[in-house]
Image (tube, rainbow, N blue to C red):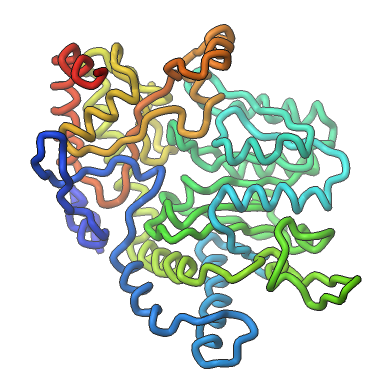
Length: 442
């Protein structure tokens, strides 16, 4: 399928893309979703595949019935499809199904405890909390700095790797920021990490749905040791996450979450854990989530992920150019638009709190955006230049208005026409700022 100038030819692929929703005056309008970085809608192909599978659904692993065998084979074949999607080597790596990216990183943080006795985890100031908080309390953690525009400092990364002299066991870095859309040079970072005897984890939640990801052969200095991502950000919102990593990482010690499906044998006083990935997937698996993810991958492959990336870049550049010259608008991390971004534009309007602006857009015209700090508080504080004194005040007063931003994030089905409409509405809101603030502050 070709990507047209407006992308409207792709809207039929999306379940609910043209649905009408109520707004505050009682009318109904076609909703516009600019909150795709949080969760994408489902592909229609995903819904169809789930419905087609429903009559065949049964327990997986160990069931001898026809439906059980069919479900088990589908579940296991999915690992190969996922590995192929990101060029993972299944001779050395394993694909583990989790609930989401957060679950995947938490699982890895526990699994590495069995392999890392002493050592340092390097993460960065631009991470989602899910690639920050799981490392705290278990390891000594240090943070690679970012500049005022939100770009990761490779110089600081190299300096810290050198400074710790081989003690860094893992560099945990986002593939693409969920705040600014900045894409990190993951293969350059991997080469640097491996040079100093470290491994690399890439949080691919924002990157995998929007750009081709290649984990590279394991004998390449550019290879990615661990990769995590979520189906609900790639048009398959049925609760599945993916953790891909070295098999031997998951062979030592006890799994973090235990129960049915994780063992080879249990006696009253003995447990022998199964091999990975099975020992890491306790309980009944989310087979519908796996079916949905595979359907989404097949659709993304049919569209060509690089074509998707190019089209979304066009949307992002167009949106930035549309709103950057509006009065009182500040865009963050986009002073010089670069191609190495995913489709995100964070901004604020002077004099309107970010949450208030998001309410106005939703209630008045049915435009969905995200506001706040996007589970990346330190990064947003850096971009907003929030002072330590201001941070301390917010810590003391939990009822204070927390600084944040409004975030536009696009999917492959969004259109230039939607951005034009958004720009018109944003200009109207800015010109009638006092009216809207009074209306939505009472």
